[in-house]
Image: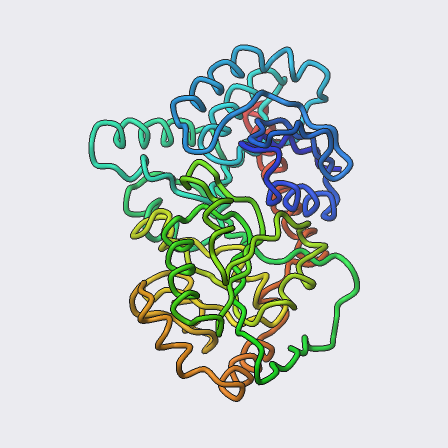
Length: 391
């Protein structure tokens, strides 16, 4: 069985747990090591006891660099009891640095995979800081054999034009993980009663202050005709006082974290629309990503709302589903919902439901295919070593 050493930036990130389950379902054995950003230590991820490399904080780049440097000094002792992996995956740039470090502690040539699911704004700067970081990324990537990313726009808008990576690319979208029997029945959205408010769900990593303020102002303008439901993990470093702000909004509710994928159907069944917009790094990463909530919401029949000019909007346009705002304003949202009635909503739901299940779901066969793709890196390294010995 393929043994993967998975180095992650945040052990508490639900997306890390999902990736681990995907690799396990595909037949891999996974060892996890990484930092944590949660208040409580992470004792288990998908039945695996992780190796804790210390704490880091959202939005504190300098602190994270220092934590990585400290971890690099002690990484050998922390990995002492770990059997030699068949490959090492570094989830984002700081963990790619540790993947290069970890490789030295194992005999032979262990292939490295660079998993990049966000392009940090510092990498896009044109000054010396940006140039230095891009140089570091190019240098660390020289030892990698594969780039995994979640949106083709990251390749099109960053990796290719900046000449960052000369690697094969595997696009693994942020689809919903479903490992049980395939559900053949379509998701049937419950009808909306005449007096019921429209509900917009904003779920997942809540880090966008602009979205929070826009949705709050919009819901106030609509005077209860539209309500906002928030769930997930707020990035408290990005808000002045997230909890107090939400508590003071009459038409906005925050219901805390949820289990992914176990709770997805329940939480999306409670809303009519999903907020698939992020202004956190507008014009850059936020324009290029395809967020988890896009796939989750569509899988369970909620109608996505995106922003024109983004990869998400292009994705919806190609499939003829959802709605895209022309500008990020209360007026644009109000114009959309002033025209919204049950018939228009039902037609929008039917378009979402008509899509192939595979557009939203990563299943058991996909897990096997991913692990097989990773396994080919090991075979390629072994073949290359054999050729060198023969020569």
